[in-house]
Image 1 (cartoon, rainbow over the protein chains, first blue to last red):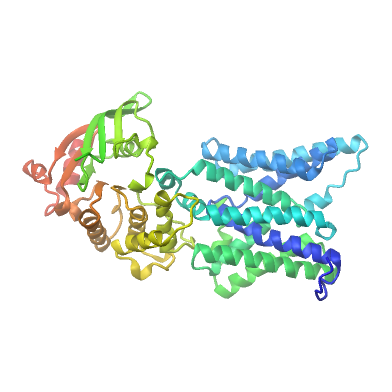
Image 2: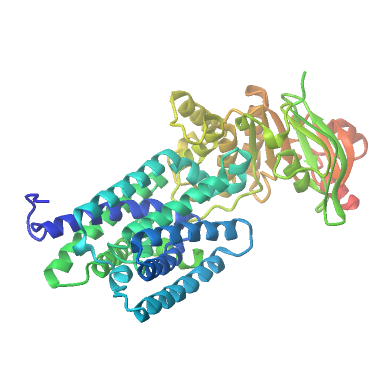
Length: 282
Length: 248
């Protein structure tokens, strides 16, 4: 990109990583804020596992793995929402079905591809490979980021209405099922976009941890979202810098920084109520 | 004057057991009506049918002259659900929550204009919460939170406000403030109010009619007529629950 940035972002590959990381670091918590409020904090995790099955299917069929991951993740997210919305399975049970089914299908597809002599390297998809993003990747991620921001601006208040009280929202004529489907699709798209950054196994952390930190200090939903986006971006910058400085895996470093920020915020505010109650919410 | 709400011989069953059977009622503009009945009398089912959340198996319902399931302007009906347990960690302010009620009038995808912001402020004023409009809802008392829910329903300037047990479990002072808010809504906003509640003592003086339900309508008339049957809503507020218990 050739931007005059200081170390550790002076190299082109670090600048590409920074741009992509900032977009995902900022946008993932925008979607995560609604998932957390909907008590579906681990939805990203379940859909991430499903996306892995899509990646492996792409490798097996010699189709771009990101496109197959996107297709499988969107269909899976809509199915989870359908199961949950019709009371056919509780939120966590619906997620568990996809958690295990997705990772198992991914393992089977990947082993089948290897048996057919196809070069299979799933590690970049599982844990991210942000330092290898191309300028084309930047455009794709920027387009997805724009979509997420636009949807949040247009439908944010309606989504808040649905996650607060879907019964009252239905009486008010708000398209509850449509907005739940929109949130599911945004979740799937965010996960696939973030696959290159932190990998499908860690993306849920980037959607949820900044929100957990922001909830500890925010006094409104608006400041929760803005704060979470800021914390997500900050985690990305510090994580990338730490990865360059000490030769760490960038995806893991970013998520560890987000975890550290939560610990610091919880320590300063003297409370862990929002963050530590998250697992019981999914 | 056209009724804002009518039900004509409405029935609904869960399996073989009828929850409501041939219920007929009507509410006129600006009327303040209470719907009471013992537990299991079908109040919640009737409310769901009246709001268009479920289709009656027999009979017809109209809200503002239309089938409630196909109501074009949803903002004309405000609904306060049974005391909604808010997430204690919810970082949403009073103004943010009340603003979600305005979506019914404005359209969920449209940006709010000055008129919308004024309607939201007015709704918060109507329930006497303007001093806490920027406070997180989770920090308010149960009674204050219930008034926030009423303000959310008011934000769309409804012609009909339906409240399901709005004062259940809140303290006496909050009950009084909810009563004042409902009185204000009827007098100043001229909205019809349908209140489902076991505790009518706080609003007894303001009611135009009481409807007693036990699968079908057992009584529909002014509180005075109910008093003539030995059931006092105001001074002897415990009369009604005792009478309802006898019915159950």
